Image (cartoon, rainbow, N blue to C red; front, top):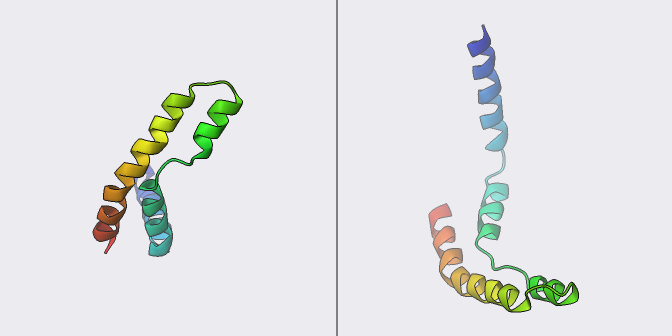
Length: 76
């Protein structure tokens, strides 16, 4: 009985999550975007490691040149 209820719940979650492919695509593409530049600004405001925050912004921006088109190809 318990396993049957679990299967019903699992099927319902799968159906609900597949309602909008646009929503899933948008979320996946957003993960390939670079870190916001406000990261470095907030680091400066709160006297944190500004150099490290700037490196994160730089690296994620360079990486997004590859990851964004790649993820778009995988979604199609």
